[in-house]
Picture 1 (cartoon, rainbow, N blue to C red):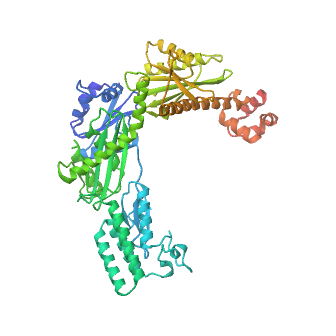
Picture 2 (picture 1 turned 180 degrees about the vertical axis):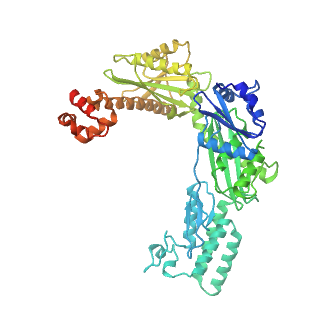
Picture 3 (picture 1 turned 90 degrees about the horizontal axis):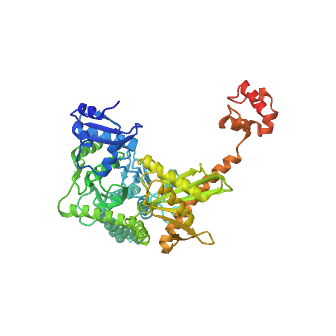
Length: 594
């Protein structure tokens, strides 16, 4: 048996990774330590721990650890274990998308420009990352339109020019209408554009305009002039004011009582080429530096391209280890910078302001709904978790219930549950509601860290005063007080209002009405779909189900081969034994039973 106190004494004074596990051997948390003995012991000492850590420690049954040579190795191992196991109490980056890059196959005689999400060691030039495919597509479209490079995916000589040539979108290299040298000059300009060397392109275009004008090639001069104007516009659109760094990611963080938002600005060649943001929930008690450290490690572990500098406001405890790891990964120096003044600090603050705005915009509607619910129901606190229940049955057959959860202002479908009624033998919706809520409350009392989680702040039931009273009876069994309201419908079976236990109808704003209607529809669908599933299963039940030794797979094989029960009944024993898994003894039993 694992003795935590004894194992704490055996911990080595070396760097490594520790793995906290529960009784089911499920990983709860993965962390790294400069000194394993010191770090792991902190979890089991009476010090100022956050509620989140206290909840985790209550679940720890045993722990494991892996010793490494240094902190950088521990960091890499920690990242890999978190990514692989997704522990419940780690800060988890859920978005694992790959970003688009613009690729130019410079080794080709007539290179193409296109978008890719995979970087290969193929001698091509890659530009990015772009925070979203839209901005990358916009740039590629601009390039192909203004520089008239080929549009086709596979280049080959043709007998006639394609439509793009006739609408002035391609210079038709497949027809030999442009030389390799002239085409390469266009590609070089595109590369300068993507590298941010706008001044060089503009000087070159000015030169082309003057030369074409002197030779009275006015159409060529107009083309160069239009290209110059377009490039000036798109470069102005991309430019970041007063930023001299040319290859950085800037990270900003904003936090409220419900969520955390991390915003990243991508700056390449002194231009902001895009941005991205990520949201995390239930991290109110986690320090900003811990959130950022976890985010950076998970975000950059799968990135092929990492900038020379990553700027953020917080000084991270494991900053040096992260820098060493990223530098080793890229084969060059990568720095984490926390600027204290000047333009760099302003740029980090701009990322933080944007994170705050993004978070406010995301949470505004949800928070307003929760505040409105609190006010209109006269609750003491904001109801972060509202559970709704609905009963579904037809003439006491396959009686079921559905439960849905509105968590932090948003329906959380992962917390939806289905119940098959066990104790009610006749059609009685009130008795069914009492049974279901009794079982639901019992789950949380017996296993507070189980799948149902904490008890709700409010309960909504589909129906009126009789359903409210049924729910109240369920709560009274455990001496629990939770506000309960009924969701009542109009003649058109649409949500009309909420009703309290004094039969008082509560008027709702249009926005709150829409939210509760959506919630009521969702829980109704959950219940009715489960009812249909059981009903369909009942309909498809076969007499074969009553024969010992015949499971679902053998039943399906028999029906597939013979087509019906009647044909199986008429089949000879030798024919039945041709089915895989049907022995002579089982075939005789089938014949006897049928």
